Length: 351
Image (tube, rainbow, N blue to C red; front, side, top):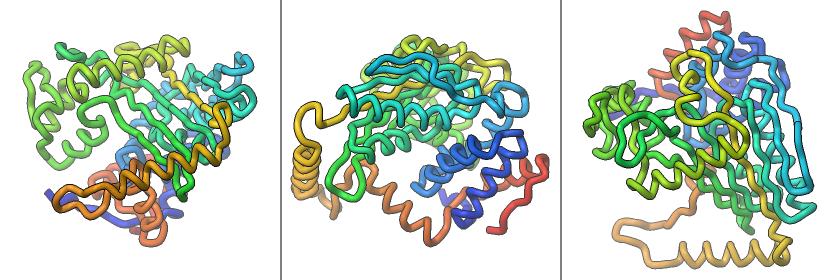
């Protein structure tokens, strides 16, 4: 099915998202970071982690679930670890702080872990894994969120989509970035499919009756399935435990208010950085990683395939194109944002 879209210039889109957050009382410095993360998602062709999410974020800002003026602060640290309190504000500023602290400590002691608690959604976690990788470290980021996914063998919403991301520095222009949900599909992909009455693959989720369905709208009333059966369930559980209990944050049904609009618990995130110099020279590591990537890309292609892409490669090519040509946004999303902008007295840019 063809989804109607509009094209908007990146600078105009950034301004719009910044002003929407400003209209909800967010200070200039914190909202600028949030708008940048949303824009980077749009530039990479991951709009489901961009402006499409803003209505939910703004709803929680307006109903008091998120403190628009909340600020992240360091509350506990050792040589190789730290804990950041997100101040129940926008999630992205605390996540950027966590990446910087993790890299600084890793370059001092070899590796470092940083937890964030009392936070909100940080969106597109590959953004933070990439920040770590571009500073010469191997990065891992994971986060939890509202319950949307059933356990393997269950039907109730007890897990989030629990994404995990890795960033690996190489000698190429861009690091290797792996960013994935541990559910069969991300919640955002199912949400966008429901806008257009689309079907999704069997095994994506169940309806409110617990029966498997391919109807995206029905899955939104039921639960998403974990990816790869028990394997995805196991990985999702680990992400939840690292993001929740380890950081002193809530997990599972305690975070349901982020979707329902009711009061919600404390969301947590986990960041890990490894300095390759702990094991040898950074240049040696990057050269070996790049050589292996070249070997993979030079291997025999499947029928009809002319290029083996590395994780993150498509997104960076899309980013370069969209910076020139503009960002493609679903018309359905643009209409929703237009209604929201009118409520907040924010002017919409012309597509």
